[in-house]
Image (cartoon, rainbow, N blue to C red; front, top):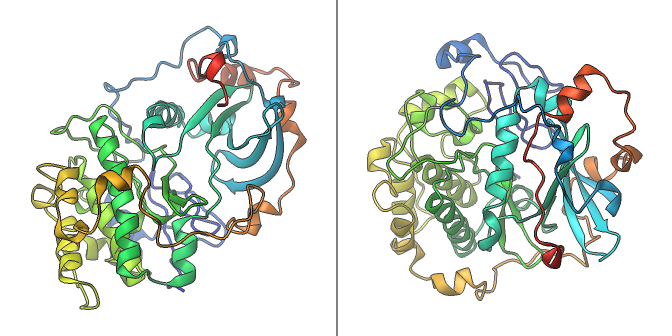
Length: 413
């Protein structure tokens, strides 16, 4: 198994807890079992707690007096049987649910509005919804079927994927052989390239956000930190991500572009081949210093093409990083991926090197028992029987335009 990772809290970084599940936390937040940020790390980063996403871009108006609940949607919480909790995060839970009418299985992400408002994360939730609506055309991105809301909750109805997190399999096997790592890296790269073609930067690639479906293909999930509207030559400055995978320019609070995703791909590929992220240290300040200054060390148990790809992806200067000129095309034509037929890859004609053992949709062996053993709340179907307070009214109207559903004749097909 990989060496356990200990994480510190930094502003708007998704801090994995409970088996590395990401949480967005404030600078001074403490969680049980997690070391608080040392003064050294705080001084190292000099993070401004009031830092906000660029307000002039993708501005979300929260003052619309019309209640969001006036939005027409064809679906409601009681349309589902909620079977098991399969994930948990800062704002709510992910549940395995079966639609009562068509008996199909979905992953339903249920978020608490009050918590989102308290943490001032409305913009990221709406950005996630926006990105999810654009994912329907790519085979390696999780798909959104519906989004809807009640007075106090938001619901995403997503593809159900039960092959387990890439992290889960990597933790069990420690490293992957090169052909398997290449296959996963190719599917991930194609997904990132597609997002970039839509002017979206993902910004949070890590093994916990990479799922395997029941056939063994990659499914990228969790789009809460995506940045929309970033042109090929555009930059942004928001400090976000996950500590082990932060690119140097993000750590230095410099303007960065879509090449942060290629740095993260390099970090994930390195971890698949060597067992740990490239600059990992239990001491967070030391890890950040490594990311900024330590030369990349590549042991010879990886092919020359593999090492060349890693050197290109993990170049500390983003202007010289692989992908800085022609983005995904530089991955596609790199010698490391020469065994990959990209048309066959996109058509899922390449047999995955590993097929998860699952007997059916209710087989939860690849999910953390910490979640699946939790009781499912009956309030999921009775969310509008609330005592109306000012905070409830604020939450009810804070997410205009959230609800989404396909045309009636395409629903749940």
